[in-house]
Length: 290
Length: 283
Picture 1 (cartoon, helix red, strand yellow):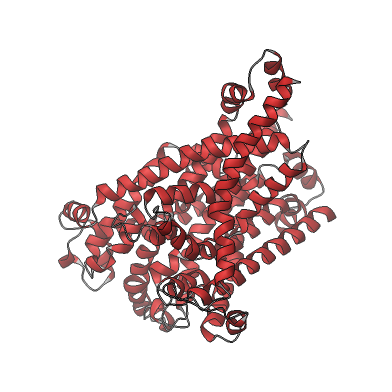
Picture 2 (cartoon, rainbow over the protein chains, first blue to last red):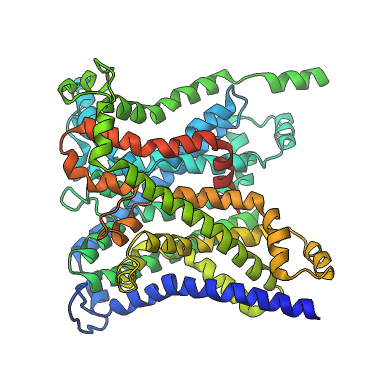
């Protein structure tokens, strides 16, 4: 059939150039990065092959180790906080309240604002406002800037990260809650199921797919944190808040560690793939059980 | 029974409403603080909370005028707009076609299945790993500029957008196209006259998702355009940090200016943005 041939040819003519573009700017640099990870390339000049030494060094390098610790601490705490708070807000925004659409609109605002500028605004808050509040209330822990303390700076970054991430997760939970049919609650009410048990036994099992999406999305976004670190601490104090992305950017682009940080980037890539796959299998299994 | 049911749906849960309104303070407070500081003079910034948070003595937009000059606001805004609009338009054209061509071929052809999985798996590749090779590559190709950034965004958002278009198309029956084929229309013509207009809701989702990620992104223009002397709006905030120094009033005026365009866009297209984001994540 003539039309069939035309269809196949058109599809091929569309797909090939687009696929070529994708390979050129995604697959090719990925492979190049992998190749560089076996060299001692500084980003300029000549370089030698060093085999797997970069990968061995990654596991003994204190700075890399600390950046993984910080990034994971940040991502795990951030993901949990974000999901708990946004689920609470979503339940509120989905109940019978006044001004529902206006409130929903307001709670989404942080998501549309850029992370860097928000980071700068919060930086002022942590440096000048919060310590004054802490001093006047006599709270020792808050009376100096969180950002200059090696033990507290990461918390400040968590707060800013959550402030933005909650907006997105709330919207996803709301669309999940809207899929729960009203008659399930009516049936539950007849059996006297209310409050926490109503949430745990009726609502939550039905929105598990959305819980899964939120876990994967926020974990992935938190692991790739860059803007907030750049704006709030630049990795300090004493490299205590250096995220993996920030370390790769900082030392790879201008620190003469192009080869070494390529190995780091590749390890980071594998880490993200493994975590996403594990999370998706767990949520899929949970879904099947129900 | 009927009247009771109606009455129940009308009952407003006031405690929750009040709590949610109070919660809005956490969202408005940082924005209020930024705006109020931007309206003040450095001499009004005394070392207590009132110094930072009280209303200014005189309302003046002088800081905004100065910030516009210092950060070359209009050029940065122009660059951001150019990059975002170009990325969105090219994405809708290319990714829509790709979603159609690949999605419609996947049933008959194994190769297209592999191509689809190959492109979609690109979603897991963090920018950090592509960054360093891409800086070299774009420099060698002579596209370490705004054009290169647009090209890279079109590639980065391809996995998600192709997946969204393909998912949307799987609900559009092929029978519609077949009727047009019998009338002798070419596949190309069928796409542009029938399929492309039908995908309108998905175009909106793709446009919103692509526009917001592009507009707020710092890392890509930071590493690719650093040699050109050109800024996007967020990049300008980063590059002029040293010039702001300790003049927070000037800095905050600049931050507010950087936030205004996206806030206006949000106020105008709030419904489409929220729907777009929810659709994009859930599908």
